[in-house]
Image 1: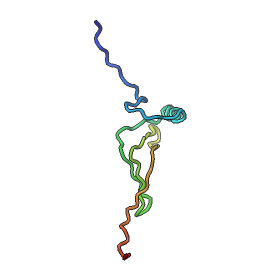
Image 2 (image 1 turned 135 degrees about the vertical axis):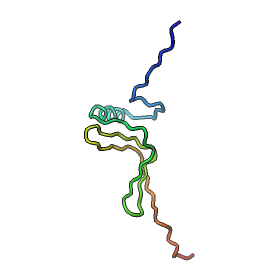
Image 3 (image 1 turned 60 degrees about the vertical axis):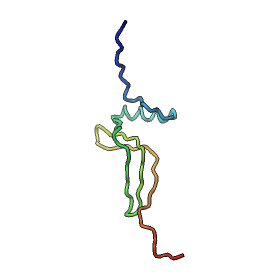
Image 4 (image 1 turned 60 degrees about the horizontal axis):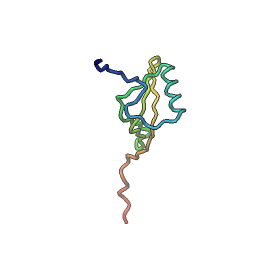
Length: 91
């Protein structure tokens, strides 16, 4: 009887696979070929456009360039308005 060998999962394969189109798969493969590395540690990204408007990406896919130090972020952004509600209006 042979011992069970540990099989390593490729970095490009995801444990929880989401349904991706063929174009998305090609794009992500091309990013890896251009020197971008996928970062899995980031779970939430917040962009503050103005004082009261904030864009949040809850489950981003983040790629970092190994050459330039720039980032590519993929995900669904939603807008949040952080301004307090107008309390001067009376019903």
